[in-house]
Amino acid sequence: MPADLTVATKVERKPKLSAHVAASLRSQILAGDIGVGQKLPTESQLTEAFGVSRTVIREAVANLAADGLVESRQGAGIFVCERPAMAFSSITQDIGMKISHALNVIEVRMGLEIESAGLAAQRRNAAQEAAIQEAFFEFDRLLAMGEATGRSDFMFHRAIAAATNNPFYVEVLDALGMRAIPCDITSPWGTDSLLTREYQVMLQREHLAILKAISAGDAEAARAAMRAHLTESQRRYRDRLAGQQADYRFGSAATP
Image (cartoon, rainbow, N blue to C red; front, side):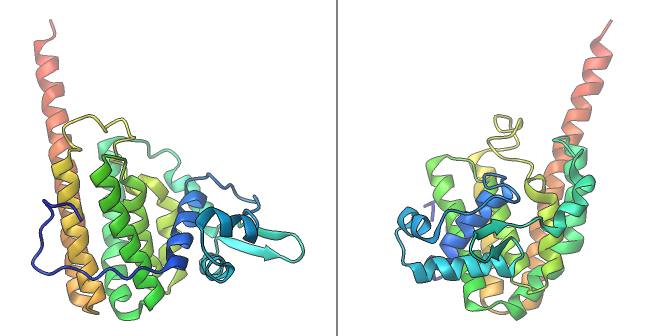
């Protein structure tokens, strides 16, 4: 955890190899690195790539199958599924990178994720809690290295949705995909004033409050922490949009 991210109470890391493998494969699938209908590497290849046992790989693949991301075809291997969330692709295909569109996405996420945080606090199992923690610590690792945190940010929220044990929360979030986290150093905004290290540290503090509440099994605190996180994100984007509009008015006034 970064030195400047101080908290009164530290969350105990609960590493679980299968959750780590599942999160990595899930991230590749959601990013399109492993496309729909494409076969996953063989069990032997995954064992070698991740340096884990076959048992760990099988558990990770079982988690992906439970999420509806992959399916086993007897004698052929494991393949990426045509996910139900893709039926909603028309909702998000034209969202783009406009701040006004990001605000619309956050509004939808508030209706979805506040309750999902509360349900995750009540329903998560050990593997699901470990997946949330792994995504949190991956954000830390990338932040410390100055690398893009957007994917780990999304995986943190997706792991919470999965921990509701209601697949529709995951499906809707998957429909939004990385558009749910439009501000990342790989995006067109990555070099502007909105995305700074201080901004990302603030996000991680908010993530920590959510994680602690879920780990404590406190549904109301989890809802409150997620509401605070998304409300702050909404405020930050609104401030940015207001700044853009002010710049536009000033530019228009100065045009002969």
